[in-house]
Amino acid sequence: MSQASTTSSSAPAAAQIRREASRRRTFAVISHPDAGKSTLTEALALHARVIGTAGATNGKDNRRETVSDWMQMEKDRGISISSAALQFAYRDTVINLLDTPGHADFSEDTYRVLAAVDCAVMLIDAAKGLETQTMKLFEVCRARNLPIITVINKWDRPGLDPLALMDEINERTGLTPMPLTWAVGFSGDFRGVWDLRGEEFVRFTRQNSGASLALEEHLDLDAAAEQEGDAWSTAQDEVELVTDSGAEFDRDLFLAAKGTPILFSSAALNFGVKQILDTLVDIAPPASPREDRDGGRRPVEAPFSGFVFKVQAGMNKAHRDHVAFIRVCSGVFERGMVVTHANTGKTFATKYAQHLFGREREVIDEAWPGDVVGLVNASALRVGDSLYLEEPVQYPPIPLFSPEHFRVARSKDPSRYKQFRRGIDQLEHEGIIQVLRSDRRGDQAPVLAAVGPMQFEVVEDRMTQDFNAPMRYEQLPYSLARLTTPDAAEVLSNVHGAEVLQRSDGEFLALFNDVWALRRVEKNHSSVQLTPIGTAAPTSTAY
Ligand code: G4P
Image (tube, rainbow, N blue to C red):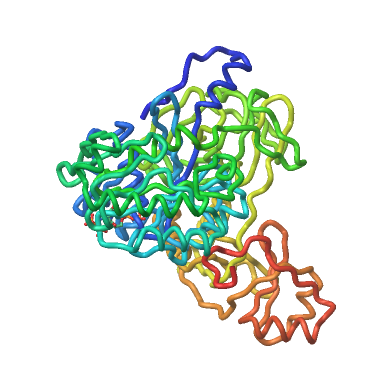
């Protein structure tokens, strides 16, 4: 991995910071599981020549060795739970690719990552079109006004009609599809892409089962027509229909998150991947001034500031470390600088700063707006916290999701209660689970609240592995939570199908078996305040 920045001095000039910020492209790849997110991540890294060939990271036999998978549970299950950032230089830019979990149960993590990026690449499986999680992710991006580049992947396999896919995107997301490349050859016979802006045909030839870069030939349009025959005429007809419907690329529409550029790829064969990277460089927004809690925007050249979008412990078993991932918003981060933790006003030394992606780590000496820094041993930092140098700033908090699964947690061995308590507090601190308590249930039996049930498995696993505090669960019947006030606890204490507990951040949550139990309370106890929790989980059917 390369840090890819220019020289460091103790006080970089504003112009240098602005220049470095304008070179940054910070984005995440998001998709419904199985659309090819991990494969594309590998392929992007391959194109930037971070890894020599994708052979070590791509393909069934080695899939579990990908650069982004590291946790035992992830390896066992072949899913990616953790999020970190991969940085590489491409052309004259520095690309920061933030990893997101593949499983819908960890969508809260994905949401946090989306708070830290400037753009998203949405992968769609050509055979499946817009799937449940795709739609929910589009919604989350819309809520954040995040520009999206849409990539139709797996074009090497039989799939849907491309025009039908354009219609589906338009009708179901409300975004105008604006193709930048168009597939030549029907899905299942992917010959290449027509680069609509460069006005050329890029023909791909498969190499070594996708383990190395695909061979690219660049042909002018006449040569393409001559050599590709029917496949070319079909593409011509399709492009004509799409452009006639007003879907020409408009960067302002893209940046305003009203239109989405479209590209076609086969991540597995490395077809169309270079075009995705070039699109990121050419049109994706660079790091720019970020809105703070008061609605102001701190210029990128202002003194250092950033916010925590992920906290993770136990990444390195030998060191029992605790890493906070910071998105740099302004200024230059220099390792060793002493910054202020906005939430406590305390100073914070940054001696141990790293780039982390998968199991790879590298000490980072400086970082610029758009970059991600992993601060090791940052146990005081929580998701959403801001850090700054000199002038204070606080970035908007990252809202918690509304939990939909609830279980009582108990230590299997009462004599290890201290370790149990420490473990639960730590995992809550990392944002892996929400922890609710009440006098009635007592401290020994906290209620854990999750967006997806797999979070419980992560907790159980970490409690045993990291804290040596084996635990067990008792299922609770609740499926719905509302914010409420302390006095609701008494009112609802005898109501069937409802219960009030206090979350660690001080908020009171009323839990309900189902929507009927909620409605009954709304009807019979109208004095009880019940407010929906800010962000409904993208996994939620109510979303
Ligand atoms: P995810 O992270 O979004 O969950 O998807 P992932 O990359 O793990 O890909 C899911 C499956 O789709 C993998 O197949 C992967 O190889 C395949 N895949 C990804 N991109 C493409 C593509 O462009 N074309 C084709 N044909 N397949 C693609 P798998 O069966 O899990 O493993 P494998 O044996 O194919 O490696």
